[in-house]
Length: 163
Ligand code: GDP
Ligand code: MG
Image 1: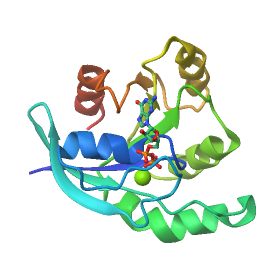
Image 2 (image 1 turned 60 degrees about the vertical axis):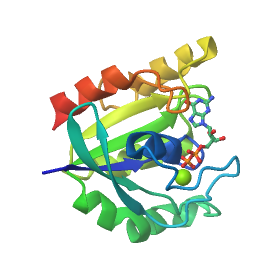
Image 3 (image 1 turned 180 degrees about the vertical axis):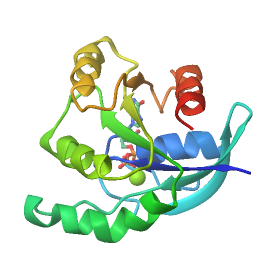
């Protein structure tokens, strides 16, 4: 049985890049413009010997802060409810943003276990962002580079531990 894993986080942090890496095909659209993934997408993938059903989420873009929470609920509640594990991704280069904190508050209200990912960690300047990510309250962030495939062994270990 594949483990159902939803990748969530604000636009442009690299969710679809990780989704594609774990699926191994270019199924999800990756683009420099935030928000090109319109819906949540499901695909089978794996990390090491763990079979995954991956859920790539999007749909928070062009949203004012006021309506963000209701939009999140509409567009990802189903994915979050469906998932056995949530990969909550932030951008280690940019550090923790207000939007990341809104996501964190939302995720905290779910029972589903959360693994926090500090993506774009391939560069030296991302260290501060990884430190900030601790403050989101999901324990030790897993530093990865979805684009360069770094940190995948740590991600594997975190998934094993959390699931
Ligand atoms: P999403 O909106 O969260 O799905 O983000 P995308 O996967 O579409 O990626 C947004 C941008 O970040 C794209 O330009 C990616 O190439 C870039 N990106 C994704 N992962 C990494 C990474 O590990 N390092 C760096 N430097 N850029 C990344
Ligand atoms: Mg995307």
